Amino acid sequence: MAVDMSMPILVVDDYNTMVRIIRNLLKQLGFENVDEASDGQAALAKMRDKPYGLVISDWNMEPMTGFELLQTVRADEKLKPTPFIMVTAESKTENVIAAKKAGVNNYIVKPFNAATLKQKMSSVIGDF
Image 1 (cartoon, rainbow, N blue to C red):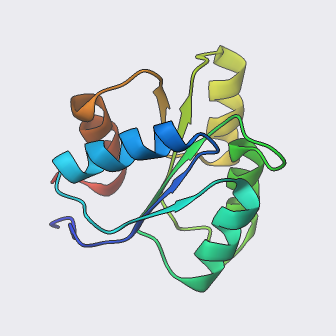
Image 2 (tube, rainbow, N blue to C red):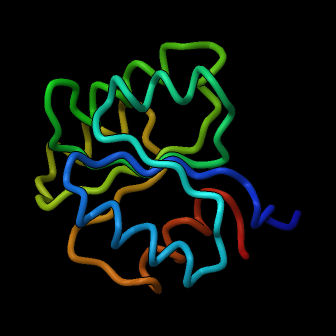
């Protein structure tokens, strides 16, 4: 099944520069339909408003972390099927395990490039 390159993707990060970097990488990969949220609560509001084909979220945010966002998404019947990739600066094993248990689809450690993003996204949504 081909990936819909026009599917909406939600990038969640409280650091504007990171949002811009991820948006640019997604653009390089051919995804133009990118929304952004600066924290978990804003992301949830957007997700309840419109369906996303993928969520790429930072782990460390205030007041609601990416991990809390993931847990909330997985607990919500309507949002539960949304593919979710966690981005973090720390590759702590316990974080990876916690995120996997909470239902994350994949995990990216910063810094990363378009090739890494593409590989992680392909494993989650299929090749594109």
